[in-house]
Structure formats: structure tokens, C-alpha cells
Length: 116
Image (cartoon, rainbow, N blue to C red):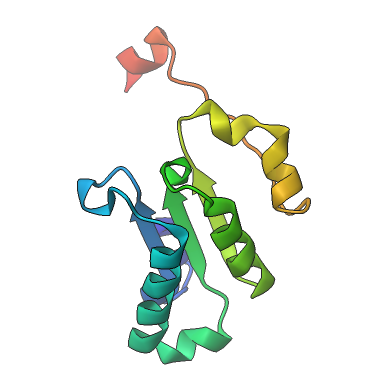
């Protein structure tokens, strides 16, 4: 996100949601659509712009794939991250209709931790 903003993308066109936040416990897809409506009410110019949606630990939302597909169909950029093996399944690529790229991020080694 920092890279996008420092490259000139207005920060209002980046959205970060952490689904481990206790305030989001029990969120459903319909709630995400309401959130999106409120976002576009706050920034109506973004309805015609490419925005970046960072969805962290999204596997905590049942049916999240439908929301991501909804965003992708509107030419939005979506970055999904999580620590669950549910995000590694081939079913995700199928449910997103081939519009996914998986990047596996491994934890630091002991040596890397010492260098940090």
C-alpha cells in the first residue's frame, strides 16, 4: 500500500480490511456489500476509478469468494492474504474463475530473524 501511495495513487483509492479485528466478528458477504456502498458514498469519484482492496485474513468471512469476484467483475484490484490452508486450495482459483495468482510467503528463518 505504501508503494502505491508513494507512487502517486491517492490514498482514498486503497482500502485495507483486517478480518481478525474483533469488531468484524460475524461479518457476512452482505455486510461487505454494505461496506462497499458506504465507501463509494464517501468517495463517489472512486466508482469510476481502479481501487485496491487489501483483504487480510479474509477466510474468516464465509462466502468471501463471491465478494472478491464482485470486485473483480468491476475491474478493481484485490489482494487477499491469510494464514489459513483454506486459501491454498485449488478451489479458490476455480471460484475466482482463474483470476488469481498465489504467492506463498514463508516465515523468516532463525538467521533472518537475527538480522532483522
